[in-house]
Image (cartoon, rainbow, N blue to C red; front, top):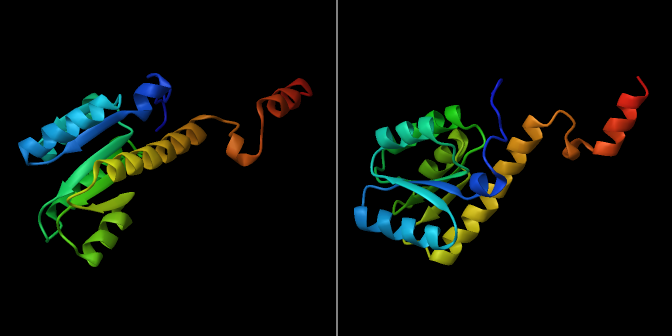
Length: 163
C-alpha cells in the first residue's frame, strides 16, 4: 500500500502477531495460550466483525480463521482481511472436509487449510512457514532494491555512486 510504513513495528512483533478467529471460546482461549507460550502476540476474537475491527487497529502476520459453514459464508473474511494486510498469512481451520470449499478458500487468498482437530505441532509449523513467507513478501514489496531480484546493497550503492 502506498504510504504504508512496513517497518513501523519490530520484526519479531510482525512475525509473531497472530489473529485467531474462532466461535468456540474454550478453543479460542486454548489456541491463544499455546501461541502466547511460544512468544506470539495473540488477538483472539469470536466474530468476523470483531476480526475486521482488530485488523484495522493492529497489524498481523498470521490469521487463524475457523470455517464453520459448508456454504463458505465465513470465506468472505479472506478478501476483507487481505485488503487491509495484503501479505497476511490466512490459515483456515475447519471440521469440514470439502475439497471444493478448500480450493475456493485458496483462490481467495488463504495460504493453508488444516482439518480440525489440529495437533499443536502441526499448527505451529504451519504458522511459522506462512508467517515467514508473508514477511518476505512484505519486505520485497517495501524495499526498492529487493534482494530477491538479485540486487545487493553494495551493488545498489555502486550504481548510485556512478551517477
